[in-house]
Image 1 (cartoon, helix red, strand yellow):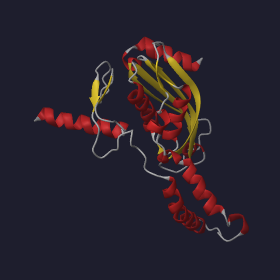
Image 2 (spheres, helix red, strand yellow):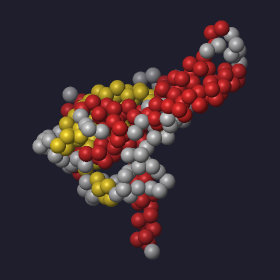
Image 3 (cartoon, one colour):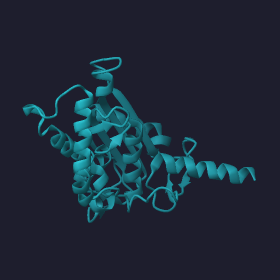
Image 4 (cartoon, helix red, strand yellow):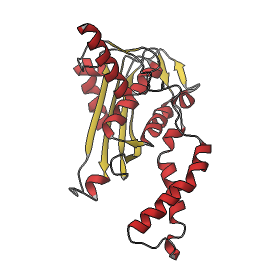
Amino acid sequence: MERSKQKQINQNENSAINGHFDGRVKIPGWSAGGAAGTPSTAPSSSVMESWREERTRSLEDNEMSLPSIAAAYTSILRGLGEDPQRQGLLKTPWRAATAMQFFTKGYQEKIIDVLNDAIFDEDHDEMVIVKDIDMFSMCEHHLVPIFGRVHIGYLPNKRVLGLSKLARIVEIYSRRLQVQERLTKQIAVAITEALQPAGVGVVIEATHMCMVMRGVQKMNSKTVTSTMLGVFREDPKTRDEFLTLIRS
């Protein structure tokens, strides 16, 4: 009975963190409890869509929802004490609604579409790194920008991914309402799901406007998050090599 309860806890934890597993996937060196060196099997959740099917908004949805989003912005302007009918604000609700749809366009895209025909069999077993990928996102708590850089590394297991696709994965997950911790994990797990490499490392350095222009108002603050899976988590030398290379 106790074992059954623990199994259910692990299933719920994995599903909540990753959010897009397709079936049961083994990630070397990573477990739900965070213990290094212990392969884990991460089951999918019936509540969450698999990463291959993930898409929650279409272009048709954008067209249908645009008037209601614009109307909401009109209400916001009135609530702020502005006159939505003055010249400078006449088109602002529509501009803002269109901009918000663009800022969150990641909801319209699926990882499987991006990676289609971009995974190649290759006898390469040395580290692959793409660093300084520009990232723009929206804080889901305050709806203000998060921006910074993403560094990705992986150790291939006979398969490699087209380099530009790593940036596309970042774009899909960052163009949503996010917290940086979840974004970091989603990028790493998506690469693991697609390639089944020996390991993946993702580091994000970002500025949060909710800390810069409101609240504590710390202009030079940066938030750094990392996710290490497989050998990047269990082998200190591999992890140190990755961290050294992205800082060089």
